[in-house]
Each structure stands twice: as structure tokens, then as C-alpha cells.
Amino acid sequence: MRVLKYAILGLLEQEKRTGYDIAAAFKGALGQFWSAKHSQIYPELKKLVTEGLIEFETVIQGEKLEKKLYSLTVTGEAELKGWMQRLEAVDFSHKDEFMLKTFFISSMEKEEAKELFSNQLVSRKRKLDELGRTLGELEAEFSSNMLFSSPEFGHYLVLTRAIEREKGYIQWLERSLQFMD
Image 1 (cartoon, rainbow, N blue to C red):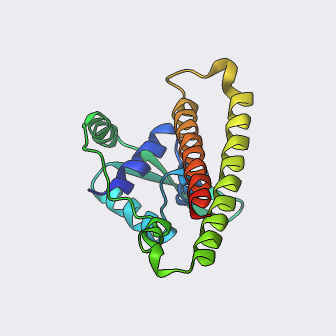
Image 2: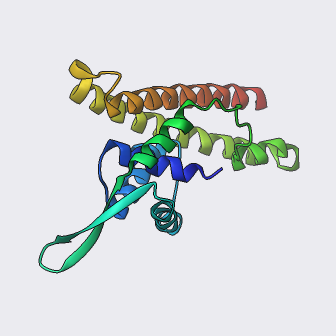
Image 3: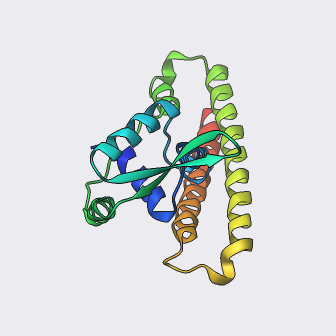
């Protein structure tokens, strides 16, 4: 399944965007749980246009710079809605290089393993702080009018899940480090 297709359709359902805007979204809020590179996004945009799921208009920025402003078609809206309503099995194929190293931890010296876990702990705490700041900003800006129908509502749900994920990861790392002593 081309999940990137649905991520792009969802972004365009929120508002018209350029390819650059779409790529920036993957570095922002979407980047908390999904990634895509320019080299993936632009070919997918071309496919979506060919499939009639999105369309674009060429707009002029400045004096000469042309850019494509993409929007969802009625067919694209129906495709997105169908995907949103489809029940999927839980995907357990997540790749986590740190967990792979952990699986083979007995190949390391104890101090190396502790350093590996300590570095991961620092990174996860940094990520938790970043997520907390983002959540605080979102709550400050939209808490009084955060409605189910607003695009910010989904962002709020994803952020709170990401925060819980990082808290759990941190607790597990701390317990693991204690267990190594």
C-alpha cells in the first residue's frame, strides 16, 4: 500500500499546498510519526495527478518564479475518506535499530552497553522535552477552540501519544540501566 499517497491526500484535504509545503509538513508535525523525502514526495505527486486524485494550478511567486499549488479533487476526497474508514490490522513491522542492537547486547562489553543505553536515554529525554514544548505551544494557541473537526485536534492526539511513547521508553531505559548494574 502506498501510505505516502494518503499522507499527501490528507495534507491537501487540510489546505492547498506546494510540493515544498508538503515536504515541510514531513519535517514538522507529521515528522513525529511519518517521514518522506523530496525524492519520494515529488514522484508521488506526479502519480496522484495522473490518477486524478489531485490537481494543480501554476502560480507565480515574485516576478518569475512559477510553482505548482496542489489541491484535492472530488475523487481524491473519496479515496482519502475510503482509506480513513478502512480498518487495518496493527502493523508490527516497525524497524528500530536500537532494539536490534539490544537484541544482540550480549556481544558487547557491559560498559559499552551501558553507554549505548545512556546515550539513548539522553536522546529520548531531549525528544520528550521537544514534544512537550510543541504540545504546550499547540495548547496555548488552540486550547480554547480545539474542536474535533479542526486539523489541530489530530495533531494534539498524535503529540500526546508520542509523549506517552517517549515516557515509556525512558522508564524502560532507566530500568534496563539499573538492571545492568
